[in-house]
Image (cartoon, rainbow, N blue to C red):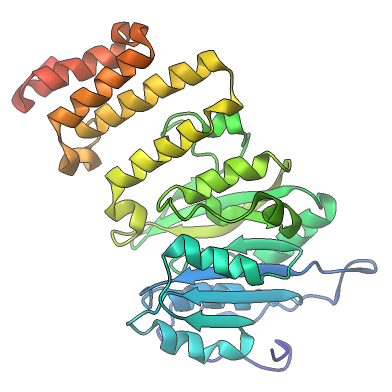
Length: 339
């Protein structure tokens, strides 16, 4: 792979404003601190038909100017302009391929199997890194060599920045909380010692939406968490994103993964959480949120409410249960007045 110091990146196909379009490579010194070398960082980008966004992802990785980078792109056989864009940057890419795979999780697993870095991470082909992300990760790794490194994640859409997810107090207990209470962890800001990743093993390919959360649960059984204390990645929110397009499947799988790891807490709390998960799924089918409107289904809501009551009968006396029961029994036209 040619030296970043001697070879300039090509011009962007559809250049935007600012990073990573209008800035040069960030050159870093050969040594990290004193005589310590920069740790090798492997970044994997899984990709499939994200030609609209992938150049921004690629440039945000390469323009880091990180002196010990291994960059791997695993494309699932895209039929859009993705391969053309990858070829433009292939002199800076350690390995790339474009062939049919079994999906995003399989692509990441293949990339991790090739990884030789001290630290591994993946960045999806519609997300990106901030300037100096890899430098900040390397400095944190120097201080916490055996820890899972977590940084903040900025969420944005075509209109601009939505907000920043500040990562804090990440633990199994926190991640077991229902959706809406547990999102202090965000995968794009996660960097892991390769030794820990190998201990944990491959991502679960039977999962399609919450495999990253399952991975994080397993990682935390083998390593502590350390916080980088700055924003590391940008997460793009758009209608084509898998989790947005399949919102109901995403929510169901998140709770499936949560239930899988309830053994990490005590039995009383596990029963209470299971009951809440079923209530939240009932709320999905009874449109508690405006985004849930396409998933209205009284029968499935009734099933989830019954499951909640079976797991923890006292749930019936809760405010949420009573509100959902009213929604289940009343016509939609009376939901506003009836609860």
